[in-house]
Image (cartoon, rainbow, N blue to C red):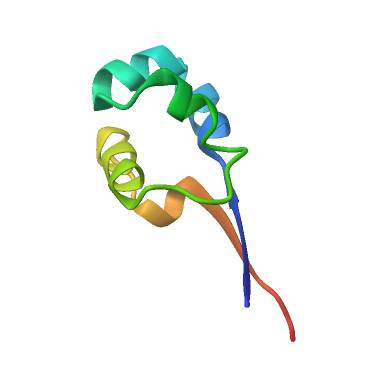
Length: 69
């Protein structure tokens, strides 16, 4: 089992990119980007689009920790 925590806002802050700028880069509404780190479910197409716009692997958008069972 894995714990997956989104970290898009951290990445944007590190790169000095606003949510509005990412919205313009991806065509994804800013409100959707705003909810990314709070959501438990993400549209795969948005994840891939954001990763490509930021030149990241999909896994890089999340902190992934393996949990012992």
